[in-house]
Image (tube, rainbow, N blue to C red; front, side):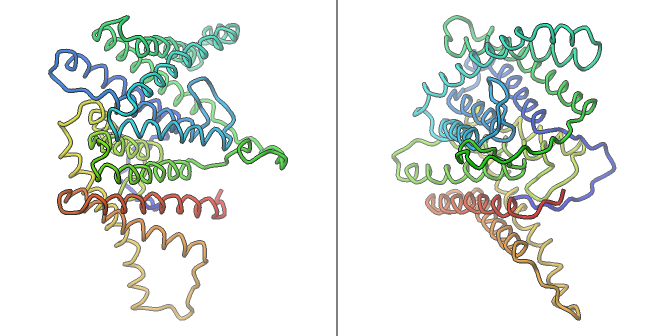
Length: 411
């Protein structure tokens, strides 16, 4: 897990992408890569795994729900009920990525309904507000771009939903063209939203009065982005660990390409949204954004096309986990060793919450090293041991999310 210390890189422009623009950017990359690959898949030049393809899309959409309360049918209040629905959808998508063949029909229909119904609902809402949309279209600048890009994305989502639910109504070539058009529309919308948020920055609204009579599920979930993603990744790793038990017993099939691809895409979102890398947190410079996009592209390719990048991605993720465990440990304990050699005249006590944070991060680093070794030596480390490592990693991430949420806010 990446630490929360910022390292300075070469002087370069910092990209202040919001999580909404990041997820739209990753969805755009997904559609564009899928569209380009579909031409070769149609001719039989490349293999294709529909389960992990649909599963990855479902996971990305669910992450949007969990982090922002933005659903395919529009914005909703981000209550704990919405968070749970998002996690449930993510688990279904993860299951499709990890275990091929068991959820094929479910994820295809679910993705089709999300695209078709979501696109139709958003188009109807745009039509009902046609006076406002018409007024925005008359204003040169970003409001016009937002209206046009939104309408394009809604139309393409509806068409792709129909194709997903009724694949016989079109050809692979036409589907590829629709995917490429949708990818370009999502990229246009991501740029429009990023520009809009710079021109009209959002102001923090004062929190409304707390309503104690609300049930837990209906209460707002005040999860910061870092905490929401920690919970998401913790659930992902714990669920993967549970699935690896029957996989190692030979009772379930398993897709290493879906696993590696999904992990890479989640890593890419962390890089693009927060500057979080396996070896620490950095400014979101041009180089870091390109690194995040490269991670996303490799992960998307692995989920769509199995068997080509498997070994290379396993080694890469293994090395990243090793580095992500060893480097933070060295950075954390070297100053402590220096302090032990030259102790201060008056010892400075460490507050209990900070001590718990350091212990949890240290345990995460150690587990990350073990996970990296298990990926580099898949035939040497038993599968059940890898499952236990992943389960511990997932639980520790959930503990870290709890500790961070309990720390006093710095803002």
